[in-house]
Length: 465
Ligand code: FAD
Image 1 (cartoon, rainbow, N blue to C red):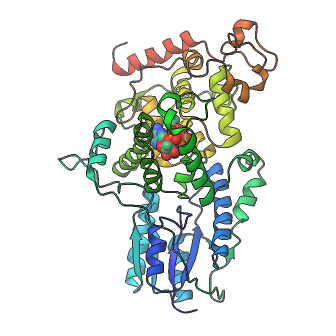
Image 2 (cartoon, helix red, strand yellow):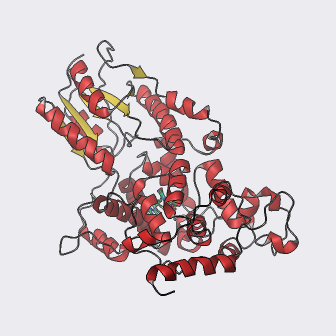
Image 3 (spheres, protein in one colour):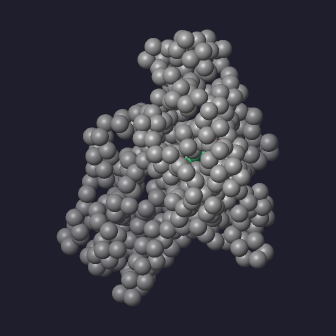
């Protein structure tokens, strides 16, 4: 084949606002589109998403006259082999910001450049590169409010790029290439495990669905976003998180479309939520072990409990607390959970059950389709009180108050915990007070006792018991 430019797609499965693809097309060289499945994505739900995304992105590229070539193996070995086999003149990619990805990319860049291949990387999935928003002293921000003010004032806003009008694809002469795998293969491997069936009913991981999801949200819910976003039974939030995670859409595209709407409290609040995502990546950039180390080291001595039965009950939505169980079942069935409920279930695990937040972080990583190490790590540490700008540990969310306040009629609980569907509104939050419901467990902890246990562990940690 004529010496092509390789575009290495990683988590940027889109044609519009794809800086690496646009720049590659501008070179005039034929484009060879690849993905390398280097086993880095180990989490089940994320692997399911990736499998479907590869399949659907391949279909999109085929419609445009090309294809996505998928290879298996460590990128550090496969990419140089691809460059050699195709005599590629250059490799282009959009940056990723997780610690492992960054390390691999740095090594590959050096390796390929050493071999005489030009490598160009482009801004990835954020509004601001994670090292750019800094305090006057050049330090990363620890407080979201200050971070977001600085980010909003930074001004280097880049308008999203249109999709290339025409892509000249490299013809795929397979001789000499490492063995390819079919784009849909991983998706089918995951379907064989059974539990991902619910994900397939819920999600279509492609660029068109991302744009449709955004358009629906802007048409319907943005105005009321600030008022309704904490009520899990209301369709008030965008549902964009997995599309952003996998790069079917970019925050720049979302920002531009949202900014074209009339100004409202909903708009400012929604933009600030995108800001939390940016903040999380900037925290991870500065603290690469965000998902595994207490950012407040005093919590290293916290006497977390080991209780596999309680963890299992939490994972499967059988704690006896209806809102917690509804959330955990929504997660298991759909790979997604409403943000308010994520906070409630996380607080319940860490404080009511006194289980190390890392146990919960791992379960979310395994089951969320929007899992990313920045947002997940930062939010778990926020809830646990162990992170930067975290809610203090002693502030425990009461699952009953949360339930009555944010799901007053029990509509969300009824949807995900059908055993309770027939209870009247007044009893749905406390089925045990109605004498219990057949098939639904009694609470695995009593709120007041659990609260006292958590607080005395925390006081002991501070030496104030
Ligand atoms: P919307 O309300 O429509 O918000 C728009 C976008 O802003 C979201 O798509 C998301 O990209 C971003 N966003 C919103 N809230 C947050 C937040 N608190 N932190 C970071 N970004 C935010 N989000 C993830 O994308 N991946 C995760 O792995 C993840 N793990 C979480 C773990 C816990 C314990 C908690 C409490 C929250 C977690 N979140 C995570 C944040 C949040 O719950 C989801 O981003 C949100 O529920 C996604 O739904 P949405 O797209 O409808 O959000």
